[in-house]
Image (cartoon, rainbow, N blue to C red; front, side, top):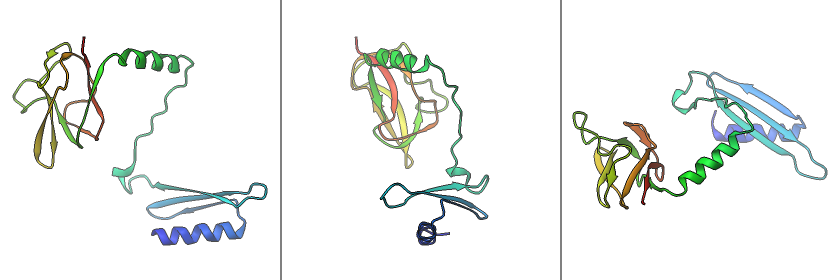
Length: 163
């Protein structure tokens, strides 16, 4: 089903006055919900859910986090603690490596002191290994990414204590 078919389906449902329509095909599940508000145009919600096994690369694992009252306070405390540290972020999209090669030791460990310009890690992008250097001198407080993991642009990699 392509985008034009979905748009036509939305228009048809809006004109019909139905409040909810569900359509399931081999690889696609679509739910269209419309609500009418006083003197307003109908609002349409479209939810496109790939069926189990149809497109595994697009499905994200859904983890239910237990709701606790202390969780927001803990997040605020952790954010306040991390605010005093410098965050080293990924300048590119690629694969994060802590070692220059599999048989070599890691560039930096937690607790290690680094100087400005020291190599912290490498990020592989399009078969090129880009060395990520520290922009500040300080002590490595935390490594935020696992070795051999994909990273996004501007994703935090390390926390450095500049004091």
